[in-house]
Image (cartoon, protein in one colour):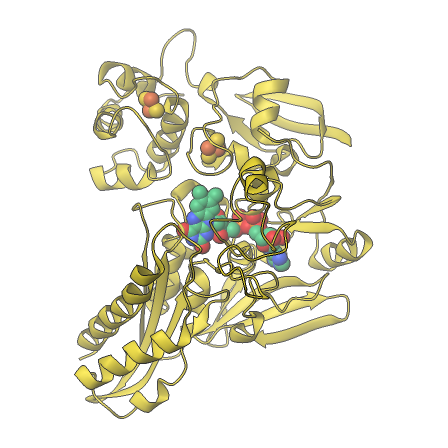
Length: 326
Length: 158
Ligand SMILES: Cc1cc2nc3c(=O)[nH]c(=O)nc-3n(C[C@H](O)[C@H](O)[C@H](O)COP(=O)(O)OP(=O)(O)OC[C@H]3O[C@@H](n4cnc5c(N)ncnc54)[C@H](O)[C@@H]3O)c2cc1C
Ligand code: FES
Ligand code: FES
């Protein structure tokens, strides 16, 4: 088993101190639960000269309701989030997505921040060093072609975090602390469609918290497809949020994970407002998801299957929420 | 770079000079000789390395030793007392919850965490709590039966 690269471990007690250290050590990395970073370091996918442990920063584990929004510190664990009474009652997609990540032991350590900043994944990338060397690597690590699309100038590794799509349909905003101070961003602007640079975080910036509106009248749900029932990344994952006005759709939002380099908030669904969820609306959903996602050969399960399964999952959830809201 | 790590392992306070990049599993196995905790995969996939950190299950292969400074660590070696098996160890033995035994320390530590927070779990709760632990031998049925049997005994493991 490969040893970890030689690094210094720094354990700041405040977010400001963490950001300062990150600036002082340009080749450093933040670590939260470590359930993504450490396996990646062991496989030689990530190296760092300093690792900044966020585990002692009290402000990162705050979880409370502030002005009709749930404020979730980036260091809140997924186990805590999945069990939180406010999330379960008012933001079910969020609680369900947190509960769907990996296995229970991962979730006890894994944090929301780590989940949102999760490295993108690909079957040519998440491999041991000898395996990667045997195929001459890929552009995400030490190579120059994307093995998934060899003529493509970009990397197609897929974002595979479960929680991001739930937060996208719930209209979440992120709070970021950097050397220049604090800034807020809608979660949709936190991501970029690039397997190698999937976050709009600048080097040195720290994700502080996520704020989710506790709006009335919304129903939401998250579901994923996976090879096994536990410890598996989503082959595709779908979150749906629905607000019904009388017998009509008030607003419907859908976001997908595992099928693009970023979690994808599906566009073009505004047209469904004021309609009922009939067959025509369901084919509209189908069409917009096929248009808005691009599963590539990043998993051993075929592209065709993931392409077909994603709208099926979305329509199933939409129908369930529609029936529940009647 | 090494620095002093203070924590408690199986009830004994310790102070060791440990390199910053040392994983908890390597500290336990290589520095302390507690080889009951197993490395079953190249990181995060199998649960064989599960130990307790302040009574909560944790993957020792995906944890830096220094990040659990000040905590109470428990490994499979800490469960038996004065030569007596804990109720989970006895139940795994009597109900054939172990075959090759490689997954067993991780299974038992994950089950121990469950029984501490939920002394009489339903079968579905046992399955959920062990969902991150892989076994290549038993097919899981005997493992779940073992945990259920242990939860039915009144003997305390501590
Ligand atoms: C076997 C296995 C199965 C898994 N299955 C799933 C799954 O089904 N679904 C899923 O979503 N994930 C899965 N994961 C990945 C991982 O466990 C989770 O995504 C977890 O939530 C990561 O959180 P963490 O706190 O452990 O992150 P870490 O590993 O600590 O960090 C992950 C990344 O985020 C960065 N980071 C962390 N916190 C911050 C912050 N506050 N600001 C800026 N950057 C930050 C780190 O620098 C690092 O690059 C799996 C992992 C394994 C090993
Ligand atoms: S050794 Fe496999 S999960 Fe830790
Ligand atoms: S008993 Fe052999 S792996 Fe579980």
